[in-house]
Image (cartoon, rainbow, N blue to C red; front, top):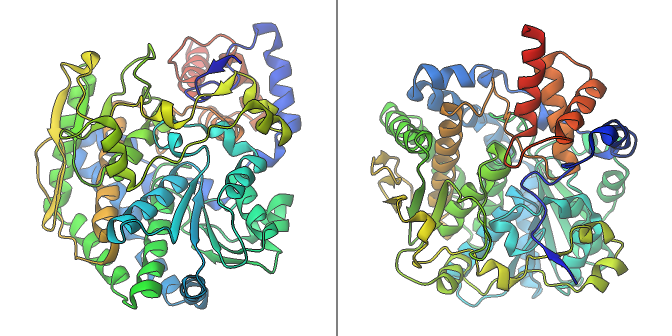
Length: 532
């Protein structure tokens, strides 16, 4: 059986012959209606960041403040939902599950799935060897470092992963999906219901929004076995980038529910608010702005950065991984692949790669190594189009996050990232003074690192011109949902109808050089033709 790397990094629709691009666009418009998500509030533009590109151009401090203002604006919402009966029901569901000897499974795709793995890692750090809390990341643990988002488009990919966990009526699956509709996550939840497990969905929209348009959501949210905690955060700081405010709020509420259900404590929300206020202080904003200038300066000169860390590895890996589809930077790659180096890479300076992964996860990797027959029997033939996906544990261990020498990174800047009670020191060596209160599962430290790294990476890409207004114009399109988002960006910025934008995107894809952003190239072509 021929093998191929996981799809992603711009694989969707590339190489379509010029004469066929119109047909490819028509096929998308006619057959991918369930992935047109512009109606969701989470996909809207945030009025607080309409000038995000200009703010960073005028000064990194100003841009950082603009980004963090979106998180600050959500504090009233967080206070309200933390006192809601739905949140109390989530706490009760977790407590009851553990009381009856069941296991809790956090399930998600992409950024939400990486949060699930983070929660399991934090649990195992507190309770070594305790199997009562598990994670399910669409595409398996390989998706921690490379987008395998073509899996996201299929309910059965999520269902198959649930079956491997042997769920029963004693268990609780907590699905995390910002938009409330992610196909694989819905598939995981639906399979858990079929197996008799209780299901709780953590979503950042009103469930009525996706249920009104999408049959899979109507069926799931209509089940008496499914409860919902809706946290309608609205628009992201960077349009559609749910790795930002949505995933922060999801992580906060999941951690707070565990804190109350397992430990009987209730400090998470006040500690988070205190930490966020510290991050929004002039001193922290100034330090973050300097860190943005430092890293963007290295990347502008074609340099690389190795983030050296011995702690909170999963947090750092999540942010660096998510830069690839969001800003189309080179993703992590296997050591035997001839590929461009990621601009920023996480490395544990004290141990080899296999041990670094065990430290990161708190367990052995949990990857997908299905034979072709499993894909075909589940109707997932599309995932075999480029050969058998190479996303097994063996492939993950080729992602060198340990102390091995990597010749291509010999000249990379190497900077330590340190998390301390008083603050975070990023690779630049510039301390960011943001105290983090000691809470269970060290979750305020995790949330602080997430906010720091999200702000640093987004600000850096804004300085490098990869954002227009508050749109990520260097978006990769490795699944149908991202094709839809690309069409909406082109439509908005060029004044075209959605259908016209779709045809122009597929025209670009028909003749796109490797490593080139299809959205940015389409925008350049259309804007250039209008100025000519």
